[in-house]
Length: 268
View (spheres, one colour):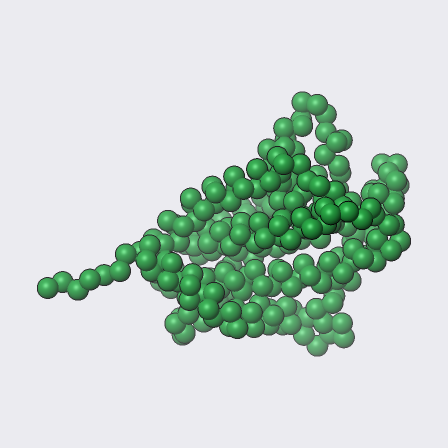
């Protein structure tokens, strides 16, 4: 009698379950990625905070003067956007090497594939938390309104993590098979930086370009965190766009990862 073989979908959900259970492994791997980058330095991983703070200060002041913006409003706007954008873009760019950078572990140790996806998320979340320390400093200089909108920031953060998890599934598999795609992703993220309202407010768009900001999924995920961090309640359209993007990513990621997860070691 032929032996019963588990279905790919069943193996996929088992992979996710085991991946979440091995949280100590992917947490340590994510932390070690940061420590290795700043090894033998005095400030260590706090160079992430310092470099981001210098960039925010320079861009905020220079752009504020050039475009005649009120610094007290423009600098917190730029700070919240840059910090959030670093989280979004960092997850996307690191997703291309999700399995490539873990080649030694995949070849030698039997670990669930989702553990390496969580490694990518851990690294970028820790960087985000380091950068988040910049906002209180700016708010001490330029006070922002206190209201309940700040409570919406964790919801936006969770939505970005879900979308990042699904993105890492897609790009991790596809970029492992086709290595040149990582360069295309890198260039696409750079382009998205300029068409997303990060350094300029969406209100600056002309009337016939408003849809460019409304239909931009990067802008939606940016707004669901950066606006609550500034005490502003995001427009419901941003949440609808973010949820719709997550659904589309799930429809692509789940069957793709379930089918090709077992082929990843052969592509490395």
